[in-house]
Length: 251
Image 1 (cartoon, helix red, strand yellow):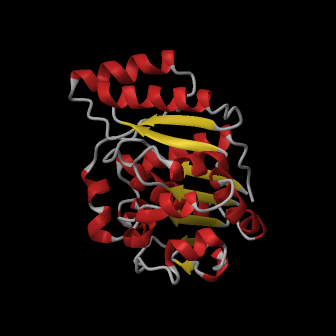
Image 2: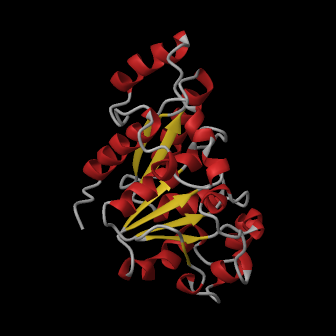
């Protein structure tokens, strides 16, 4: 099972849209796919038309009193399941602190799921916290949406620096451009120049598009209601890159 985390220190960068659309593409390709919505705001859960509620809340999950597979919900799509968000996830940092080896706890919780899923995609809250560290130790790769602005580049540098300090050499960081508006000179400049500085950058930019904003109205990934739009095609190309980089072959 490949564990991917859609993550950024910043909010509002297209993290959840990426998680939902890439998970849908993974499932469409035949991979048994699970999304765990770790963000207490529950946007990914909302997109999949599932109630943001987990029996026992975050405490039951972190303590191990509730098995993850008891809480997983089916979605409207074949091969695609969801572990919903819960408002109690806002306290996950405090709950993890009470456990032995808190940064390894998430990896331990996820291990049994490898029997049932090929791809697990974590939709993470925007922060750098104990929860983030636990995600870093559990994930094979961070998928990092980056808006082409100076502040976004700064947070990306911070993320690479944090990985180095924590000696997480096996954790792949795969940034990609998100919400790109080519009418803006700064966006064009950064999209052209950054890949030469960051060889880890994925090549496919995700455009700023009204169809992505409509996901909240349609409560669905782009492939369900706007399969021919430019953003949907971009996510398909991005998923192909991710699968190639991480050796996620045909099921």
